Image (cartoon, rainbow, N blue to C red; front, side, top):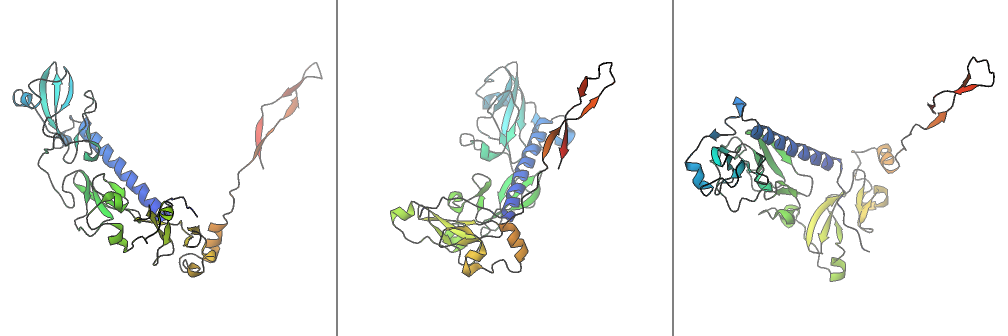
Length: 311
């Protein structure tokens, strides 16, 4: 039987994803504020501005590429220049941990390194490390190389520790949580983390991405991509993995896991999850009110505005 591969996360996983999205947006906005507020005295340490009438011109091949705009340094990814009337009027640095986004010369914007190709200008300003933050801004590995599913996001040198959803690890190349086989982080493969290896199968079965139960956790299972690479996934709260069907199911249908949620969910709560009560939706229907107006003609009837009634 062919099973469509899907990742079903539980409530804890959903909360982690939501928090991660919020963290990314918060850092992005912080960078935007820092790079767009040169007049704010509190930002001057983040966005360094100095007038370099002679030295800067050499870094951009002797002249401004265009008459006006913001242009990347040829060697340093977090450095850029402002040109006015074909003259370099300022050399600038992005907030520590971010780099210049040279997509549009009319926009003065610093961005996360994951979004910009710095291979041709790899130099960076000297870092300003703080606790858990190698640089003031950005996403960074946990100090312990054996901790694969946690990382720090830093804003102005202040850190927050983020935990990836179950089955994922931090990917330092993209700054997000990824499957272990995509992150390719040393010591953090699925086999090393979960002590699970995909059984050898023929090509027909391998093409179906077969699923196998997690021997230690009824709610989780492994999907073997092309029959070789294991990825740990999970069923939603209240369900367990049914090894016979290869899909998530209710505990009453899986004898070995029938009491998996005992002490976690009551029978009534399980029943409510399996058979949720339909939400009542107020129905509306138009009601036409008629009333007679005083008129010399007794046959004249005026219809009022239609108003809804709720059952």
